[in-house]
Structures are given as structure tokens and as C-alpha cells.
Image (cartoon, rainbow, N blue to C red; front, side, top):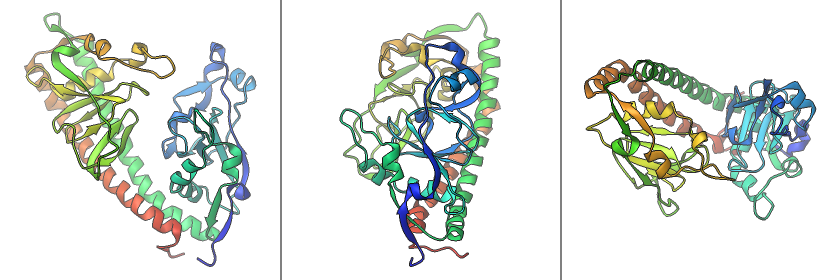
Length: 366
């Protein structure tokens, strides 16, 4: 550890800047060929694509600016404040992103990413503001860090990156498998829907339930879901059977299928599925075809209600036809489930190694 040095994050950066948002009232500023990152997409991850794009005109008429690939991006406010990402493509960002381009002679960008990932609590404690807790570029620039020699930085980052590489690969496999199942569903049950199928509403095939507070749960192995995904793991389940989880607030399209014990917080609905009428997986495929953003009943925060959801109607195929679909897709679903378990194992290993490597408790050979 004697070779490690203390410095400010800004000391090892060649550039630290926020971004900007082109006027949303100007349609000509959007849907171009320039990737534009929103803070909500920063989820301790690598960025390969963005949900939105802007045009050259949008770039020229806003504070948005190009950010070099392999920069480290910190969310400064919003639901993801303090979380980090590495952009694997050149992109632009909104104003709530702190974009850090590292001096490669002083710091390894992967190491800085993992260092900040391991420093979430410290970043969170640095936030300022009243109604909304915010970071800013100045605070992040003055963030105290401890750096080993460059070669050791790279060796540490390589260990952690190799785990994330495997995790990314498994996520991509799951995305492909889920896409194949979705394509088959749309062909069979939407494009080739039969007139004789019964018209039902969601309330006919599932019962929506509200999530509950999780603050008093002890740590455990039961996943606790919020509208953004798994928040942490607790020791108590709110339900133990097959279910579909639908966000009540936040990212409304972020629905989940679960077939193991789970807990949900109050920003997301969970459901009891009537398995005598429909399989949970087929119902999940149907829900994935919907645009929940068009059902938003909120204002500042996108929101859904049980009334809106319960009144959604669709044509219900027979149980025999559902069973045939199940035969074609079960192998894919089983592989997805296996991959998710492997992802969790790798994430646990990475999260165990992370603080030990970054504190010098565990050293790597160079």
C-alpha cells in the first residue's frame, strides 16, 4: 500500500463536463444519429447503446457535447444519483451526467469505474441540495481517491472486468432468447389471432397487488424488486409463486416475470395469476407488447393505476394452444433462468472482491 497515492479525481482527468438536453419542443432535435444518454440509463453498467438519439441541429442548439468512448460517467441527480457507467461508444449526455475522460498515463478508466462503483455511499453522502439531493462536477472533481501504480490499476481492473465480461455475455444471451420467444408470441397470438378466441381483460386472468415497505427486512437471499429492478436481497417473501411485476411509478415498461419467492416495494405491482386460464409466461409475453408509457396517468412522475391495467383487453387463446407455445419456448426460458442464476453468482463474486481489491486487502500479481 506504500506505493498507493492519494489525490483528487480531477487530478487524473483530462476533461470533466456535464451535458445538455435539446429543447423537447423541437422535434427536429431528436431521432437523429447521435446517441444521447439520459441519467436513468446509468445503472453501474457499460453503455453500448442509448434509448434516445439527437440530431446535429439538436447538438448545436444545446449544451450537449460529444464524450469520448471509455469515459466514466457519474449520475449527478435523479433516481440513479451516484451510480456510474462506462460508455463503450462515443455519445452525448444530458446535464445530469458528469462525464470524466481519464488521462491514460495516470489512471486506468476501468479501475476508476470500479473505484467509483465501490464509493457509492461516499458519493451519496456528498450530495447537496434541499428538495432534491444533487452532486455536481465540482464535487466529483474534488473527490478524494487512492490510486495504486498504473500497472496495478490495470491488473485489478482486469480481474473485475473479466467477471463483468461474462455477466454481459449472459445478459446478451438472455436478450436473444427472450427476443425469440417474443417474436413467436407476436406471430402466433397477435398476427394470427383467431376470431373465436375469448376476449378477456387483465382483471379476468390476474389480480394486482401493491408492494410494501422493505426497510425493516433483514438481509437475506430473497430478491426485493423496485420499478428499476432488484434493489437488494431480504429474508422475507411477499409471495412465493409465479408472478408478473409491473411498475406503478417510474420506468413503466420495466416489467418482470418471476417464478421464485420475492418481495416488491410500493413503486411496483405484483400479481396473482389465474393459472387455470393462462400461463404466466404467455401473459408476460403479451404485456411486453404493450406501450405502458401511453397509459401514464402521472405528471412529474410517470404512474399507472390498477384501473388502467385491469381494463386492458386481449384475445385469450385456448389452453391447448398455450401449451403448444410452451413446448416451443420452455427450453429458452429454462436457459434464461440458468443464466440468471449464473449472473447472480458472478455478481456476488465481483461484489465480494471489489472492496478487497480496491482497499489493498487482496493484491494481484503484476
